[in-house]
Length: 196
Length: 172
Image 1 (cartoon, each protein chain N blue to C red):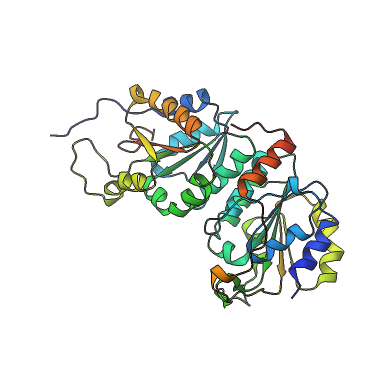
Image 2: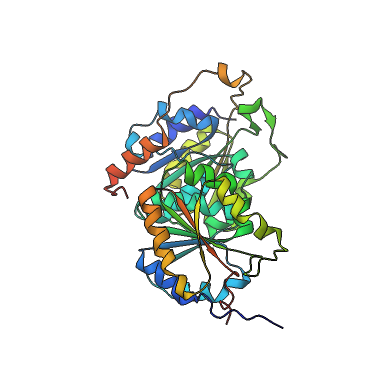
């Protein structure tokens, strides 16, 4: 398993101008490494629907690279999205799954069949143009540049170390985040999209 | 005695309203009742259809399109709308974007004897989410679709179009 911070550190070097949507407990580390917050997007959450929102963004901005850092708990809530994404074949979409094998925010209970699911296999068989699995940082670092150049939709599953939280929610240390409205406003300004 | 409906909402009228209101994408789950509408929409060069696997997805996809500056509509059945409760909350109501959702009103009829619970709970569901809605049954009602778009834009909230008797006449 890889520390999610290491995934982000390596990815940032190859990000280019991509719009990045981080999710999940692992995703909160992205802000420590991002050098272009105007292109970082918080799409909120609704039982796995951030993946759907990322697809919508990719379809609406076909000239922009869109990278989603998803989590396996969210994806399992909405597995049909793999077929939905594959059906539209967004060439600009890179779907990276940070798989910590558990529900980290609720105490680390394993997701169903946590260690034996082949997420990349499911994505590939759903119709993604390519799919990869990584459990080793060096291997990910070697391949990420080429992955970012590939025609999408591309799927990348990465095993990451869980950061389990057991404190009562009110006692947890809050990681500073930008609100959804703030990130949307900044992205739209960056891209010259008029607010409706 | 069989009571016939005097007029129906034609797919052409619906598509015309979409064009009039600048719709760019229809995020939908096709069903047998709307097959002709689906075929008609596919022929329109200004319209992109996004078929979803489950209705909850449609609201997430719509949010992404709205952030990108597009004008999507969600086209689903009332059963799927009820399945989508948390998506409507998290992806639409909390996000503050205008969205028209066109919802097939399965089980509804004019004479008021409702035997399908899908219809029984449709309006209470919308009321619980404080989503305003307009009933559209026939072409003469289609201006209500533009009213829904105007209201959605003015309030930056979702507005529903309930298609009464669920698209009878849409299969040809």
